[in-house]
Structure formats: C-alpha cells, structure tokens
Amino acid sequence: MAANGESKHSEVGHKSLLQSDALYQYILETSVYPREPEAMKELREVTAKHPWNLMTTSADEGQFLNMLLKLINAKNTMEIGVYTGYSLLATALALPEDGKILAMDINRENYEIGLPIIEKAGVGHKIDFREGPALPVLDQMLEDGKYHGTFDFVFVDADKDNYINYHKRLIDLVKIGGLIGYDNTLWNGSVAQPADAPMRKYVRYYRDFVIELNKALAADPRIEICMLPVGDGVTLCRRIS
Ligand code: SAM
Ligand code: CA
Image 1 (cartoon, rainbow, N blue to C red):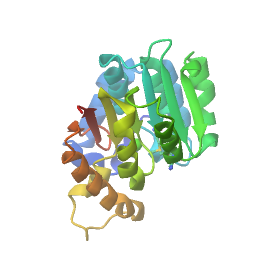
Image 2: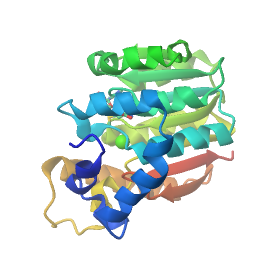
Image 3: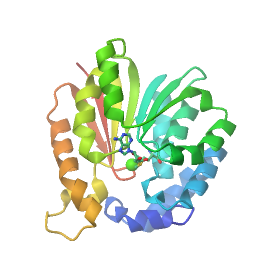
C-alpha cells in the first residue's frame, strides 16, 4: 500500500462510498494529511510497510475519532482490536492527561510496532494493553460489578463474527449517554451486494455477521444509532437506557 493510503482505498473497493478515488484523495490531501499529528503520520507510514496494513484505520477515520472523542469529553475508553495502534493513538491524543484506554488485542507483536511511537508522543501512560481475546475480559468486568456504566466510549474493530457478542456486554459497560463505535459496518460495500456477487473470501465469510449486526443495532431500543460512511463504515451507538 502507498504510504498516503491511496491504494488502500481502491484495493478494498471503497469507491462506491464516494464518487471517485480522486475525491477521497482530495479529502486526505486537503483536510487530513495537513492536520495529521506527526506521531500519527509516523505510525501510518510504519504500518504501511507491514504485510497486514489493510487492517489499519484510515487517516480520515483517525481524524474523525480524534474529533469525536474531544466533542464528547471522553475520559474512560476501551478499544477492541488494536493492530499497530493507529486508532489507539488517535484516541490517546484526544483524551485528557488522566484519560484511560483499556486496549485489547490477541496479538501483542503488532501493538509493539506502534508502541515506541505512542510512547514518544507522550500518551503511553493512558493505555492499559491486555493481550488476549476481548470477550473474557468483558465477562470478567461484568462479573466484577464495578465497571457497569463506566465507559464514555468504546471502539470495536476486531473479529466481526463476535460483534453481536461484544454488543451484548458493552451495552452494560458503556455509560448511559456514552458511545460505542462499531467499525467496518459497510464491510467493503458487500452488505448491499447480492449474496452471489463475486467477493474476496474473507469479505464473504464475515458479510453475514455484519449484516446481522446492522439489523440488530437498528432494532435495539437501548441505543440511538448513526451509520457513517467514513472508512469502511462506522456505526455510532449512543446508549439511552
Ligand atoms: N483499530 C486498529 C487500527 O487502527 O489499526 C485495527 C484493528 S484490526 C482491523 C483487527 C484486530 O483485531 C487485529 O489486530 C486482531 O489481532 C484483533 N483481534 C481479532 N480477534 C480478536 C479478539 N477475539 N479479541 C481481541 N482482538 C482481536
Ligand atoms: Ca477497521
């Protein structure tokens, strides 16, 4: 992938979300890259050299998350699915000095690619990284009792086949008035394609889970929702009861 993210956009077929790749490039070059913090740029460029770079959060979505967290005055947050830490750094930079992020990923090695950059940016102290599957950690927090309704923001960007399971738990862990962001809810545009359309194997595999999630979120009376065509689609859920 090119360090500027151009090929990622076309490779994963996000074209349908905007009129053209040129328009996406315009957004990046006019509004995103000129204002991207140095540390995020460095992390983006390091990640671009990694073989799984398709997984990283795009720079425009990173900018969006950073702004959103500031708007809601988030202090206590969680991230499920860290990879090299681009969205994590966007979050950490937005939080106040005493802000906290409980960050979970089954793979520590990739997190360690980004960690020196995160530490150099002076925000490493906000992060509590736990290596391993997120679900048992959520179950432990629910059992514990003291974490109910404590999170201002949760960003879910991990195993799509577990999003429904995450939602069942996160709805109790996020504050009333707090937000959960589910990433990749447009799943490469496949959610609106017929089931027999040609798709990459991994896109096909997770497509039904994402479609089921989208239906479940739309029908859940405990939340207000807003699905944004940013990146690969992010659905914001505001807990109301
Ligand atoms: N948010 C990241 C970023 O900005 O670069 C991208 C995350 S990447 C799309 C998905 C991550 O979820 C991978 O790093 C993977 O190891 C992790 N993952 C997969 N299954 C998981 C699980 N059960 N619990 C926690 N993390 C998981
Ligand atoms: Ca994602």
